[in-house]
Image 1 (cartoon, rainbow, N blue to C red):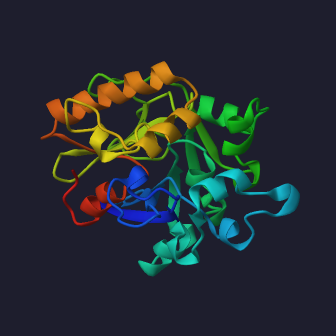
Image 2: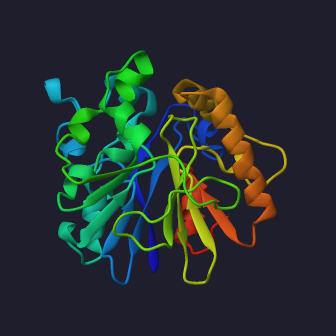
Length: 284
């Protein structure tokens, strides 16, 4: 399998290095790290979709509002058609119909915006995530994070329970319908109750774990002591469904990233440095 690492959306919140740990100016750069996997017999597989064409064209379409206005201001979202997953798939010489499957870590607005750009794809998600996203929603964050207009045209869902064959001490959902055993979902609740990572076994035998929003900053992995920027630390707290679950799973991932470094590479959804390393072929 060949894995492409895509940035399917850019956010530039005010705060610079207080968010991304590297920017010299007043604006930070955060990404929407998605995977495009070329399989031998199962077509193309996307892991998350970032923002989609309809988000770019009409983010605030009245009753069909696709992006929450408070978050668009807070994150200073830059909507660019060239960054959408569909345009990047086309740039590689493929068509929307070539994407047979989409595996979503969760259905937050910055992960699910491009689902409807691939009308022929089967969408794989945790059952709890689907149920929570479909509503009803209580509380300010819940009312804004899930945007039904982004996924209410999806017709082919595959929904999974939270237990399966073990993977490095984590419960895992194996045998995803229509997908090879080298791709599996790893439940990582906390950011949302139905949040999951997606593990992909590469041709060299190593695993790549797309951890979604289980963590946000590179300093939270691969070192014994967690380090996170103030901006991303606060944002994680704002968005968490359960602090204890989030921090427990994050600590387990951190231990995995240290103890199994020769076997597993881990990347989250929004760190631009991790994305750059993955695109260069050298995941952290």
